[in-house]
Image (cartoon, rainbow, N blue to C red):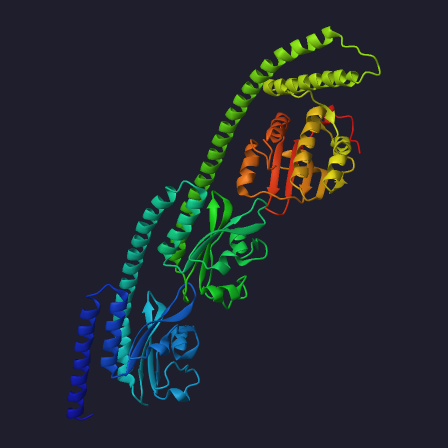
Length: 584
């Protein structure tokens, strides 16, 4: 090499050293990742005389190379550009940890085109803590654009920039965590202040969307069986999503989250076979999804889902934040549930107070009626109204005596109700009572054009009960069901034996095809102060509740408007030592 060539090379090296020094100063002036990356790319173009430059970083969650920043490339060339490690020249560099200098990309089988104008490419790896974390690329629109000196310069720039990128990553992670935890604290206050269950669920989905910058968020809760996940609340969802059917825990993607009690994410809900309804995701514009379990201590309650409107790989920090948020949310939901239960108990206490007051009032009225009624009966018998057999007044006298006896019986029943008499129990089989019920009501059902169906269990175990009171319960419910079918229908009565974690019970169920009840009427029924009869006062249902509670049983109601009503009377079994054997 001549002196002139040596001098020229030294000048070029000196120029490059100055450029590297300037790059170092520039990139150390900013901790913002995007700013630092753009500075690196601009200087890479200047150092190598390239036309464009880009930085691809390895996403630790997805394992894909994602184009993080680019200078000189048209936007459409790198929109949503992701490469598996090993694919393309960039992927090869990331996999091998070696640089690649390609002076004619069309001759290289590894090349994957993202811009048709590119003819030459130079790519070097980013090493952070002895691990390849990304690739720095420069491109030119003509062949033979780069040489070994450019490779050396770009490698030096990558070495210098890798430390800065590591620092910016650390700074960004700390800043992100601080921001997320600050948001989490604010969100926690909003959620914990929610008193109603509906309000709590609405707050959870709304704040989750804001916290995760999500397109949509939903909460799916386990039903009573633990087999189904039902959509309970959503924020940002369209009509199609809100109308989606429930999902089975064993057969759905989110069911896996419940079974494993671990977060799972999907990068592409629209293209993954794991997602339950890809067509719905496309219709709603939902792309990436993160699902985390809602846990109360160690038991799952449901799942919290967040969706993005574009492709996104959720980082470990984002997953940890959403897990923390879901724990807070589960506590808030449980608190709201307890508040709802407390309000129900308070309402039940108020209703009981009303019932007690009604009982006292009924007793007072009954006593007031009983006194003149007693006098009337005494006078009636004292008059000794005997008329000749052919005298029509005999019928009137007989009718008068019967009606006074009827009034006396009504008074006695009211007083019994007010006195809260304990049932006189004995081992009882429900099947004969069910058959007697049919005999008592068959004429009324025939008048109302009601088809009565009876399905009695064989070898039904006995219950400890007052047969007269249980018969009164069955009669009241049957009459209530008949009145709920003014245009006729079907009343199905069945008996059965049921085992659960609470012990063994005998169940007698009434299912009608009547008018059914909406939520308001069901609450009235639960209070048992009003009937679902159009003209009923609810006293019969009030008696039902009182008797069933006195027998340590429960009344269960399932009803929908226009779809009929199912009422189950669930009563505990008599202890084996008290039985005399089952009867059919």
